[in-house]
Image 1 (cartoon, rainbow, N blue to C red):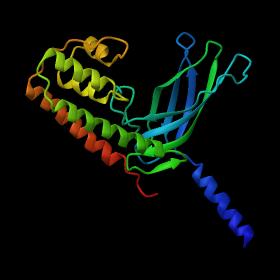
Image 2 (tube, rainbow, N blue to C red):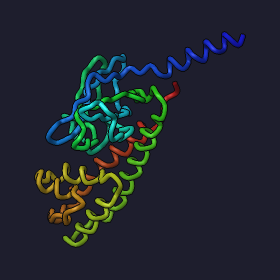
Image 3 (cartoon, one colour):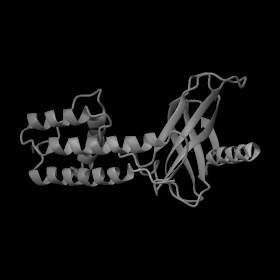
Image 4 (spheres, rainbow, N blue to C red):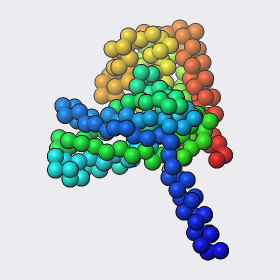
Length: 232
């Protein structure tokens, strides 16, 4: 009986460690020192998020700086579609990971430790942070909607609201403002950059604010739905 239970435990462990998103390569740019990871979805489902464990090595293949785990949520609001598309079954995708290697780094190794799918099922341990993060982003959208419903009607009021939106953890509403108001890329970049003063964008009409609010409401509802873990 004990032997059978041991086999069952080993089988369960092996199943838990079987992840269907595999790393094909991890490269270090010798000039920028940024890390790029290529992954393949070997499942029959669409991947919407994953965790990577990153290890870095010097020229002697000696481990150096260890940045640990990096979470990549492909449903993140402020990502560019070209780099952050959901990964279809069988597809190979390349992503610049948010890690900057030290100048001594010449190689990197990446391992997928968790995967989240479009049906909100998941593989690996610790993936609950994706669902918590999406719930928090939905709350940020709701807070932004409450601010925008003041309908700022003077340059000073617009600047104050934008500054408040910029102070939110992820600045989600800034992307909605830039998209709905069709801001020039340079202005949108300045708006998102907390190191710079809030740019002048004029005084949008109420209908324009309503368009931003509608965009954020749609996004909040989407994130709220995506924050619910599915039963395994």
